[in-house]
Image 1: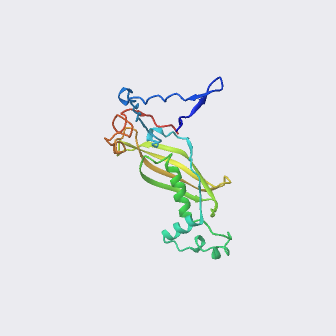
Image 2: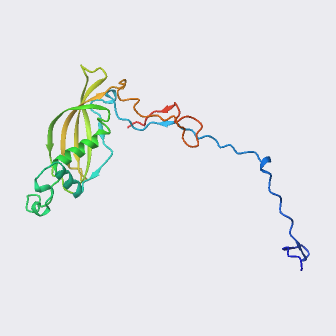
Image 3: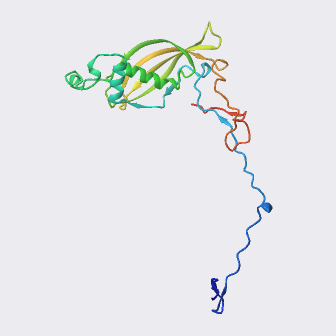
Length: 226
């Protein structure tokens, strides 16, 4: 039989056998690649304001808006055993002054309060008082609510040296910038030196995958300012 090896054309037009392939490298002679350990440094996120961070006259526009759905309104009303059909019976509500379902004002209060926590009371110990809650415009299913707050008073606690008391006006606005609700709230909040709210996050002694060190670095970055 003839030679089965593949031939390659030479420069003069004649063909000849391909050169033999290079031998595979010996693994024992190839230096091992050592992966570089990845860093694991804790970057603290927004952790809320302490008493010292509040200044009278400061206004915080809370970052999250929330569109209220019919399910939100119905479930909140029934969950709280509210039997007013203006909040869950569309046929009944059509005959009312508004001609449609009205959002439960308890839901409006809860939503605006919740929106304000990130800037006001994330580090609060307790709410102390609500004053002058006013429902200044109706809220309907499909409305999107935003909120903002203004600091109006602050003082150190006389009984708890690790805390202070802050008062702030809060108001909720719909998508058309109409104020729908407003109030003044006072709450007790930790001072920055308080120890009660720190050191509670569980720290693992197991390293991150691809990291040569412990669960995290001992160095911490400062949280971003809001």
